[in-house]
Image (cartoon, rainbow over all chains, first blue to last red; front, side, top):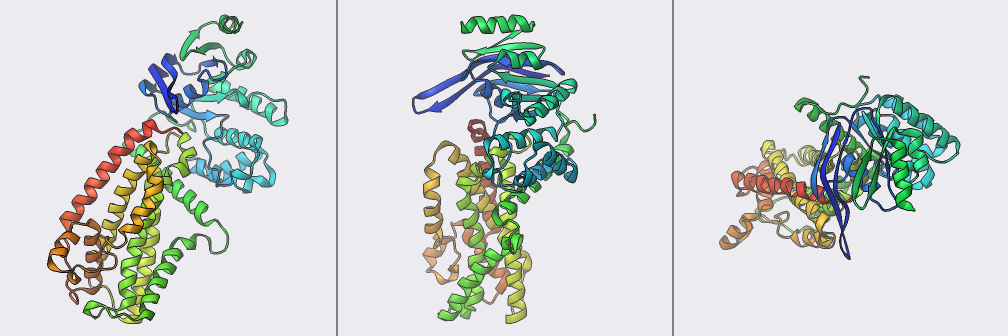
Length: 217
Length: 265
């Protein structure tokens, strides 16, 4: 279970504090697949980063009773000065995974060719996403935090990523943030809408999607 | 499903995770700094070895006699190498979190781990370099350390002061960029005050009291006592140094906590 209580988050800018989340309360249970819908800039990414513990709320509490992945589909979680292979070794070390197996698994899944032995800073943005997702699959969590970027795209990797997500879905909880209702429908059972810094849970997926479209209109 | 990361673990499990994370960060730092080209990881202590050796040799060649008839090469090496540790750690403090920030995506990696990995690595590098110098002094100049324990303690004190300052600077960097600009100036100006290149007994009596307020002066005096024994007079106060190390480190750790909460990753 993950529980958020009265979570506020604001960032300091040159124009004063920008409040992104203004009191989010939510509970995500073991095995749940929840889509979090929100417009660009609604704070989806911020919410995911707080749940992951990458950043901390200004106010409120986040309680984690299951192991939670780092946010997938973003550029973080790897070091740009290291090669893909060294990043895989780093992950294997900190999560206590078998070294050789992890390095080989990531090499195979990310499909980076010779770039795998070169620093991440030489990668294209697509390659970085591939490496990041492959790294995250090398470690198993109770709950995965996923950005939509991973689930879209009709490339070879896009298809493999969707297959891997479906596999994760079968055994773990999933929080997927997206601005597209279709993506959420493909992977999730229920949904929530993030709007104006607050999160509204819907038990029924169709109801959530209808409300999301209605708000846009 | 024993492969799934556990949500919680006991104290021993936490210590295990922390040791693994710090080890991984040290490997990362070594890979990043030295790579696998040419002599690779040997650069770790080759750098302080070369710098210390060069400074020592320059003064040896210049041939200025030192009070107490000390050997200039030894004197400058035993001053410069520990100072190199201090300067390296303090100078890297403003950029240390930023250069590993993306790794904070892993909740197991903490800012404290990032800093401690760096302190351990720098401490080990300079420790190895100093050990090599001490062996050279013994083998070539016949000067074996009088009390090796005091040399270890002096270096530990040096590391303790440097890491306390570094934690405070790293925490402050989260709030302001000011330290990016002034840290190098501070370490440069501090060169003359740290006690790296003077001995307390060289100073007039009233100045001695002032010099002994500086905690690093005690480290250098301990190092010299450990190396020279009673050939030259040395003055140091171990409880005074320990108090400085404890206070700086506690303040540093206390400052890192709120800083991490504010950090935008």
